[in-house]
Length: 64
Image (cartoon, rainbow, N blue to C red; front, side, top):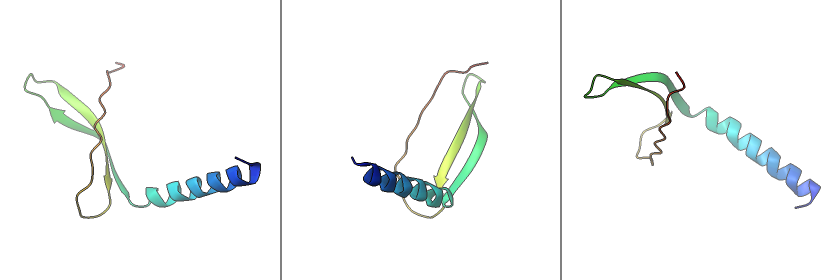
């Protein structure tokens, strides 16, 4: 990729990211109780609109 093409590509990606952030609902530290009494904390990112969307679920270990 040439320098000019690479620069245009990065500009396009940065522009798309800014516009995508305007249409996202964010909920942080949403607690979900489990059967054993433990509460899992989640950050939820949703499209700001009606409709069906794919789901990505990622779980990681706690650092506490």
